[in-house]
Amino acid sequence: KKTAEAAAPVAEAAAPVAETAAPAAETPTVIDVRNPGTGEVVGSVPVVSADEVAAKVRELRLFQPEWEAIGPDGRKEWLLKFQDWLIDNTDTLADVVQSETGKPRVDSLIDPAFATDLVGYYARRAAKFLADDHPSPHSPLARVKKLTTAYKPYPVVGVITPWNFPLAMPALDVFPALAAGAAVILKPSEVTPLSALEMARGWAEIGAPPIFAVVTGAGATGGAVVANADYIQFTGSTATGRKIAVACAERMVPYSLELGGKDPAIVLADADLDRAAHGIAFGGMFNSGQVCISVERVYVEAPVYDEFVAKLTANVKALRQGIDGRESKHDVGALANENQANIVQRHVDEAVAAGARVLTGGKRAGFGTAFEPTVLVDVDHTMSCVTEETFGPTLPVMKVADEAEAVRLANDSIYGLSASVWTGDKERGERVARQLNAGAVNINDVFANLFSFALPMGGWGQSGTGARWGGADGVRKYCRQQAITTPIL
Ligand code: NAD
Image (cartoon, helix red, strand yellow):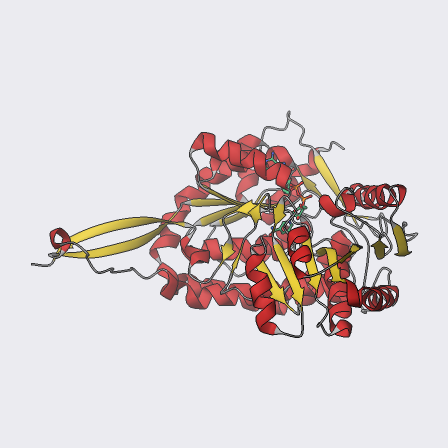
């Protein structure tokens, strides 16, 4: 869709972009944003051009030194003001998240809550995390020196995000970078750009320095961010991550890639099966399975397989699916877009054609893009539902002979984002965890690592390089290390 009014939303969200907007002759392209549950158009945003992105980055570069100079304590004041703004605007923010994702109300509230928690964590700790280190000299040659490692932020960090948590996902990376003293240019997903624009609105509303901007658009706008920023923090698919790695390598610009996953859950025979069935149903179906660390395949020891499958299926069947208003009435909503629904249907159809059985679900839910919560059995590692990321509400379940087979199959994947182990013996759980190729392992739980900013969140293999958070690492990654030696005599 083409329209000359396209520049307006950018002007509101990140005023300086409008000043550098292309001449009127170049009609900008606009992206309509839809509620995938109802099909209703809930907003539209302009496609910001590569030239506009470059100009925006130049402008951020001018303001960043002042932001760096006020130090972590000065930045803390602004970040905590923004945290207050998030708290004051939680309902409105959840409205926007809900409108562009079709999530249930309770899930939409998680976005602002998560962002609020994260901003506070890094605002309060950045000073400690960014303090100089003074390591002891090891050699007689350096004994007469004071050794210092100082942390100096990259001027402009580019953050590129997907659509599954349209407010939380950007916030999780934008605020550690701001806390580090960098300026940030954010390119949210074209599927859900409205929540990110709300963040920019809030930043302007509290009167904070102009060191954070949002540019909307699709891959080309993201490509322009990659071509101009000094560090790239990318979250999204493995295919796009690979392109970004190549582009960053050409510019010699560092990057961190948080990519896709195919997380296994291992249910050992000594597990509390009620807890495991409940937790895995939640881990597979929360956000319609559109979480990078969703449970995407389940391995169950043979003696408890039948009982576990019956309990899991009962949990999944009990889920209420639909579109919420402001009242929370449903557990599962729509998928982000038609493309996602087609991937889920293909994975189910290919599995069934190869001999799998659907115990519940297996088809579209009858409204918008929604797909029914689905349990599949008689699956194996030749099927796309087990080898490819589905990113939808499906739980393929496999019977295994023992722990060793479960570990072998869990590790038989190109991905390595996270995993869960369900057992009555926590020490055994930790032993199994250490054998898994995964950046995070939760024992008797799902998603617990997501709420632990002191831990790193990063994928192995095709699930990414680098990590977000991890306490001090979460801000130091946005800094260059500078070694300073000073004579002490
Ligand atoms: P995607 O790769 O299609 O898009 C992600 C972002 O990259 C979007 O903003 C998109 O516009 C932009 N983009 C596309 N092409 C680009 C290019 N050539 N250069 C620069 N930017 C470009 O991913 P998606 O479909 O939006 O998100 C779903 C994926 O995200 C899933 O694979 C999921 O596992 C992953 N994900 C990972 C994590 C994690 O922390 N590991 C978290 C959430 C989602």
